[in-house]
Amino acid sequence: MHPRTTSDVLVIGGGIIGLVTAWRAAQRGLRAAVADPEPGGGAARVAAGMLAAVTELHYGEETLLGLNLASARRYPEFVAELQEAAGGMDVGYRACGTLAVALDADDRAHLRELHALQRRSGLDSEWLTGRECRRLEPMLAPGVRGGLRVDGDHQVDPRRLAAALVAACERAGVVFHRAWGERLSVVRDRAAGAVLADGTELAAGQVVLAAGSLSGRLGGVPEEVLPPVRPVKGQVLRLSVPPAYAPFLSRTVRAVVRGSHVYLVPRENGELVVGATSEELGWDTTVTAGGVYELLRDAHELVPGITELPLTETRAGLRPGSPDNAPLLGPTSLPGLHLATGHYRNGVLLTPVTGDVMAEVLVTGELPDEARAFAPARFAPLATVDRTSPSVSSVSSVSVGVS
Ligand code: GLY
Image (cartoon, rainbow, N blue to C red; front, side, top):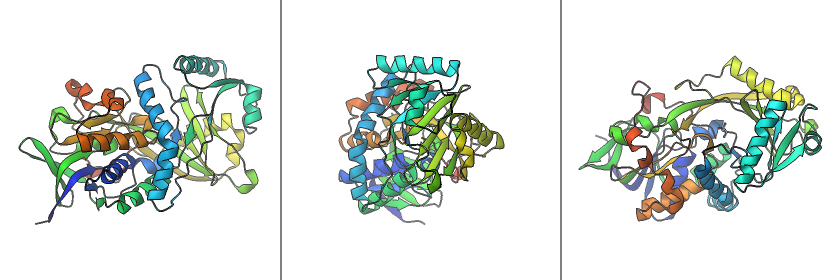
């Protein structure tokens, strides 16, 4: 018989969303625990880390824009606090801005529409000619026909962010259980803990399900409460910029090329991240020749010099998509069970606000106003998932998100 340990809050899933929830909860005086075989894995291993509230704006997502902007505004202070709490670890936050460019007439029309939407939404975004774009980023292709300069869309290194969150959690007293949550424990119609894949039984006053695209797979969760998240595959490449080529790019450069999004995110340490495909292929995380080819082809059209750079890594992860592309935050209809999942393309961006919102609801029982629109109850009649896909425990090695 395994020992039974107790916490105020048990977080299922130790990606950046689960970690920030546990860290903020611990800061507010709750005894927090995290169940994950590899804390700091998942999304952080794959994501580029763009903080792209403005350049990733989409029609119909104005409510999500408010949450994205709230989180973007918090980033500088969040990073400073986290780095200190993690004993001085650097998370690679870079206030570098973003340039979204167009290569042909269709791309330019698309970008003009985005610009109009941004302006209607009161966002800072400046239209530049192709020549002005190349003056900012001389490595851009001569064919670039115009672009949007967005000085407020920055970046962070998600791997370093995750490592710092693990360290901050440890220093704040968060307990790590290195196994997947297998089954939610429900006692007298209330979430009361979980049984882990290694048989450990954990009791908790409240449980937070924060397992990315796998959040719908936890056993024991009543059907009507299971979050309607699905995996959306993203393939991402990493290259390195040798010192002789630096500075290769000074800010994030992105475009829509023949309908596909491509972005190049240059880190201060010389890493260049190129992403991402968007594929509805279930739980598949294979890196394919076609995916790599398309990313390199599109990136090469934008920045021809990219083919000179060493290709150092290819990976695929699974974004936790939700029906409205927005996260599910806060209490479910099962007392004691909360969700922090479904962040889709914005997991890294939404990390600060998610931590604040989740800590507030865990401590006070009240979802802050800024998160009311993201309560899981908005999907109550739709909350069904594909029961044929794998369980959380059986796909524990899969990366669970891209941001
Ligand atoms: N936010 C970037 C992506 O999901 O690919």
